[in-house]
Image (cartoon, rainbow, N blue to C red; front, side, top):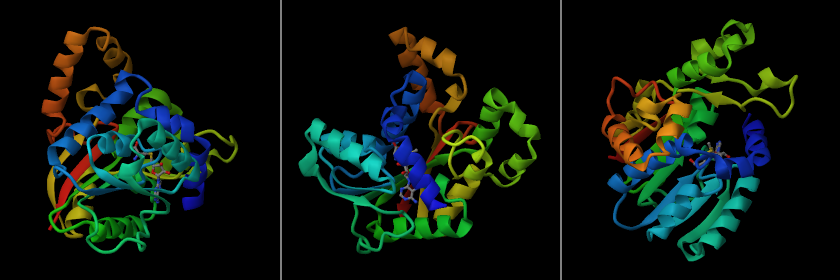
Length: 276
Ligand SMILES: C[S@@+](CC[C@H](N)C(=O)[O-])C[C@H]1O[C@@H](n2cnc3c(N)ncnc32)[C@H](O)[C@@H]1O
């Protein structure tokens, strides 16, 4: 299963590098995540970016003076990360680039990082046990009191995406597991190679919170990355053209993105906790 996820990100590595900057709508994920990173990261220290892909967050935060270990499943994403880290002039800040899985961080000692990021990978572990192991590993390598940031794909956000883009999936029997258990399988696309998403698990916000809390983490805050803009791509991209309106809307998004009444609606969900 992990092999198909690796293959997907190897094949889509350049697209993954572009993803967060495709258009203003997609930039919201980066803007909101950076907002919370800047709010809760310590002033300095060594950060593990687990599942950091081509390194957007590693690079942005390395420019601000943090040291990094970047880990990812995809060799191709890591090659792009190495290229972009060099280009950005932050090579001395990135101590190691490691190919590996969040489910096995055994090459790192307990309590070795001042902060841990896991932005994406938990939504690619379709077995519950694997998600548990990954969270235990992320918590183990964090220092006591260190912030832990995790982002995942929102279950109800996916339902709304299907309504918007793929309504035939509602009545496709092979997709039943997605609506009942939040599981998407790459095997559904076996007749259209190279198409469709890879293995994925979509979370309800309460489940993400519980997963961390039962593994020694105190919840600080949760937020939806696209918030009130979620699924309104055209409208969001349009408002970007007028910088005053864009600034106004961003303020509203940042003010409301942690409101429990909309947490589950956005496409992506961010969890911020602290190791107890
Ligand atoms: C949606 S991308 C996010 C990349 C980056 N964290 C970001 O937010 O821009 C998900 C990343 O998680 C990686 N990934 C998926 N499963 C993983 C696992 N078990 N261990 C480590 N990385 C994994 C993928 O290779 C991919 O680079």
